[in-house]
Amino acid sequence: MDGKYERLRLENQICFPLYAASNMITRKYKPLLDELDLTYTQYIVMMVLWERGQANEKLLCETLCLRSNTLTPLLKKLRDKGYIEKTKDKGDGRNLVITLTKAGEELRDKALGVPECIAKEFRLTPDEATELYRILYKLLDGEKENK
Amino acid sequence: MDGKYERLRLENQICFPLYAASNMITRKYKPLLDELDLTYTQYIVMMVLWERGQANEKLLCETLCLRSNTLTPLLKKLRDKGYIEKTKDKGDGRNLVITLTKAGEELRDKALGVPECIAKEFRLTPDEATELYRILYKLLDGEKENK
DNA sequence: ACAAATTATATCGCATGCGATATAATTATG
DNA sequence: CATAATTATATCGCATGCGATATAATTTGT
Image 1 (cartoon, rainbow over the protein chains, first blue to last red):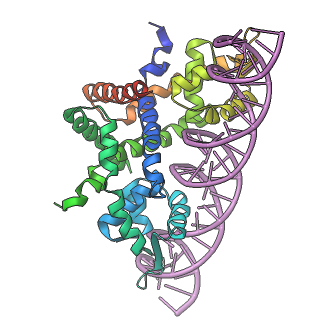
Image 2: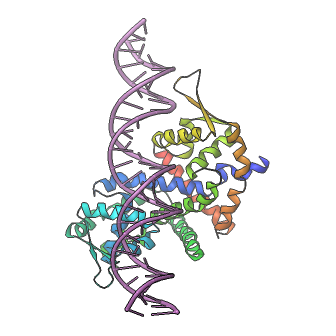
Image 3: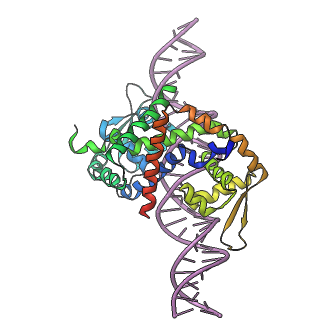
């Protein structure tokens, strides 16, 4: 017992292992994603696009819990790599419609092995993985309600 | 069912909510830590120092799962703010002994309210928080064993 | 003892990630 | 219908966070 400073101990924090695990995961992905010429953040953007076919920046921001000042330059890089295209919505000129190029579509098959490679690194039981997933989404959803 | 692409769906990833929750937490801390003139990473460095009194960079790297290229400039900033001091170890000249200044010590009391403020934002049950903590450390420890 | 290996920090370049703010396009309002 | 409010992106400046690599100090092997 450390008295009044007890709650300030690193090992009594729940946020720290979350932060450290997130960093750890990004490091894990790096060698796998290097082969696709993607960073982790670029990868999750592509994941949304592979699934939905297209999206605007606002949808990507909401889906990925990121801000436009993160995504705007990132989307520029994905375009420079030739994976996506940005066109102005003819209906609403503020909207950027983001679509996959042929190269971007083709990348999907190259990415197929990534989730399994990552899953293998984690030594969680299926129950633990499910529980982690559930609790994390509860955290994230609680946040969205605050708005 | 989406067939072969099922595992590539964002909502089937366990890493994404971890990543998003970590970002979310850093955002939560920001307004609280602004009052201490600390960033989140600087805060966890201070936490280690408050607890141990002193440390070298290597110990901080291991404890916080960070690399020297993250910590070296960060420690420089903490020194510029007057919270820490760096002195060369007389026994081993490679070692940097990092200690708290008086201002750094005093900051500890100002930080006392932070953990509670953050905890209030999370609507997890005590069991969920405990389980999240346990699983995250299992993830992190599994990683350390890989080395 | 002295060159080679190891260890602890530091530097470089790049990619986020953020709050604050600016800009451009659309919608709401009197 | 003109202007104010809103909305979608974009820009700015700062602080990480990383792999790769360099530098300085110590230890090791012979």
